[in-house]
Image (cartoon, rainbow, N blue to C red; front, side):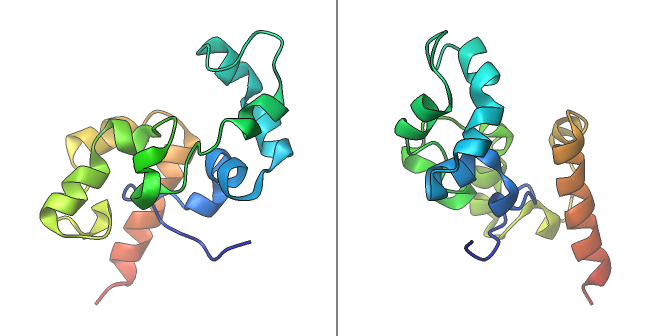
Length: 127
């Protein structure tokens, strides 16, 4: 697998199911997304993991997702755009991290919370 890529929010793209499906055609990861994709009507009620894999590109990583079919929480919250505007690599380099938008996003699920913890650990390690 490619070396880890970090999204603006601090998520490791190489751990993201949508990224794995796009970059590696990972059917196991696509299978984990079937119900969510059916719910959003991105695939039909009888479609499965193969239909998701065929819909590429889903996600090429936070910094390359201009052509992607869906946007992750980072894209929807404009973290990437904010980082670009401030000319920083990720939210952890921002002087107001974690901002209220980030805290709200991070409270949504464990994956989001782990992204915040990752960035906090990077901050703690920096000189």
